Amino acid sequence: MSTTNPENNKMRFDLEIIAAWIEPGSRVIDLGCGEGDLLKFLIHHKGVTGTGIEHNESKVAQCIEKGLSVLQGDINEEVLDYPENTFDYVIMSQTLQQVYEPDTLIRSMLRIGKKGIVSFPNFSHWGCRLQLLLSGYAPVTQQLPYEWYNTPNIRVITIKDFRKFIHDVGFNILKGVAINTHSENRFGKIIDVMPNLRATYGIFLIGNGT
Amino acid sequence: MSEYIEHDKDANSVGIVEKKLYTFAEPPGEMVLESGARLGPVTLAYETCGTLNADRSNAILVLHALSGDSHVAGYYKGDDEKPGWWDNMVGPGKGLDTNKYFIVCSNIIGSCMGSTGPCSINPKTVLPYGLDFPVVTIGDMVDAQKSLMEHLGIKKILAVVGGSIGGMQVLEWCARYPEMVTAAIPLASTTRHSALTIAFNEVARQAIMADPKWNKGEYYFGPKPDLGLAVARMIGHITYLSDESMRHKFGRRLQDKSDFSFNFDADFQVESYLRYQGKKFVERFDANSFLYITKAADYYDLEKQHGDGSEVKAFSKTDAKFLVVSFTSDWLYPTYQSRTMVKAMKKNGLDVSFCEIEAKWGHDAFLLSNERLSALIRGFLERVYNESRK
Image (cartoon, rainbow over all chains, first blue to last red; front, side, top):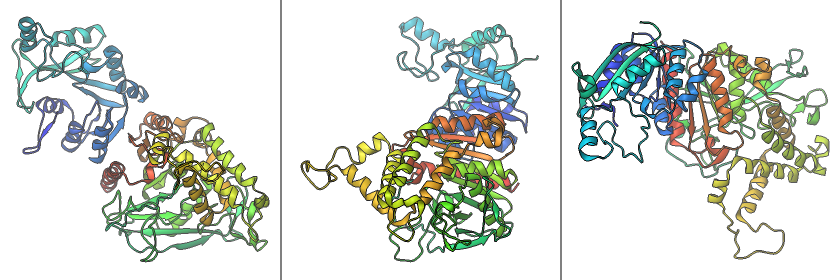
């Protein structure tokens, strides 16, 4: 998935929201940073000190070529090495649905960082619900474009589920938005009414405090 | 590291370079080595490419591996058969861009390519040192390089770069002279040799010492232990390749024949290749140097020397930015060894990038033309250079 539009250099809508939440000059790590677009944006526009972890060799190489500090590795393993509170923000953008042990990882995130930012595709969007209800097939959407047998997205998460999950693991949601995106996710809008039904993505700022 | 004769004679060459000599540590001010022995005078052969900028902030020190030399790139004269050993990386617009950076490469002490080593003349006896040459360490090599950098007026090195034993020198620079190193790129390297690597080095050394012509290191006025050194080199070559690269390069193909010879000539291409590599090597390399350098590499133990046994502590003094690179098919310095150093760097809060490049060429991959490696190094250096000027 391309994350920037080369013509107007506009970032993906969900990444723009994440960027808006981050204090200038803070220390940031992006777990599953892909080709590093968010990191690069944060470094250039927010003056953050940023690093990233990415599994894919080719994406790691592209990040380093862009001048980003990025490590190749498994996020579940790599987070273990950082001392406590190394970062102000630990970002995990659209990766949670691929994590085998989400509770362990969320705890690690809030050990190495003061706050976490987590985004994920909302599985209870009406499109998913309708597909399952009417066709009887597992939903395949623009946000979750795989068949059941080849999807890397092993977790089915809804916005409601995530709120409950964060409560269950003993953390707090400090901020949350539900968004609906279109046109390769570059444009979108915030959904305030019935987000669990109408939003394609949820984005949450989580932490220990309130 | 291997010799690759299929270097491209591309348009992006640094052109003609000159080997220079720097001599220091004249008695009574000899270098005091890690072993406590004194060595002096010490000569380093070195070469430079590119231009040192006005504030001397663009210097990159390239550190070579076992059999390398100061001739990192370019040609000595127009009709040279092949350029320096890392010509695919060092040159205008290349990974180490000579349009932007001032590249320094010196031959390590203990070697035989112009720097002081066992084949140099011992001023006390006016004969080649032979085994009277003191055992040198990776730390001693770095100490000598520091003298050269001071001689060149470089107080802060933008980046130290090297693969294999060169990578050990990179790490040693960061631990020994942390205030002098802005960034560091260890490639296909380790903080200490595994038993496997020491074992191969020992077999190679035994091959040399079992050659009667080695004569306890005193052969400089008679026949040299060519057979022993050639076998040592052949062993080395096997470890630099990989199962996949050997299958790809040779398979079971026969050399210039359609059937077995039913004698002990070189039947297989791989045999012929190894014999050729061994033969080429003895023409240019000194057997005693091979012993000294492999010993220095086997002794190297960053965590023991700089961290009281802790790899994390060993990286506590440096604040260099790191780019660590390993290669998937390297079984001599496997990726897990790079990962442990990355882990220790992270625990120190260091700025570290790491990439395991997919390459089938084994340990030698760091020497071969590889656009991914060049791009990684180029991007990393551009960042650290810009950040160092803020």
